[in-house]
Each structure stands twice: as C-alpha cells, then as structure tokens.
Length: 114
Image (cartoon, rainbow, N blue to C red):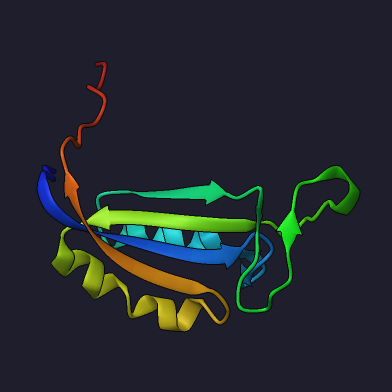
C-alpha cells in the first residue's frame, strides 16, 4: 500500500479504562481500523488531561490515576477515514473525535526477511 500526499488524520480521545465488551475501547478501535484496511493506527497514552467531565486525570504520584487519557490516531485517505468514522457512533459514548487534513511525506513498511 502506498500513501503519500494529502490524507486525513482521525484522532479519537477516550479514557484508558473505557471498555467495549469488557476489553479496552482503544483496542477495539484499532482492531476495527485494521479490519477496515486503514493504513495504520497508533494508541498514545497521556500523562495528564481532562475532557468534558472536567475531571483531571494524571500520573503524578500523589494523585495517581488509573484512568489516563488515551488518543487513537489513524491516518489514511479522506475517503477511507470518512467511511470509518460512523463506527465511532457505536463505540464511543464519551470522548471526542477530530479530523485534520495532513500531508504524508513518507509511509513505508519494514522489508520482510524471508
């Protein structure tokens, strides 16, 4: 798969302890992105943040939270990303999703060793 030039980045902000059928929500989002044939997805764990609830989540020792913010970032062509977005209606009950236009300057996989 080649992906160079204009693309769309989908960032989904959820909490680490959000679940989908007793599994981490971020895992289900990544699995569905993979099943949809999207170019890639990455989960980033935040060290501190707050959202619509205004409750601060942090890794600071005195107020250690097991419910840290996570962001799932997906990049692919606009058509593929927009086709994937409706799945979030089913998955994400609390959180935020944003779209950004981006330019992919390099997208390459490791060469397989055979």
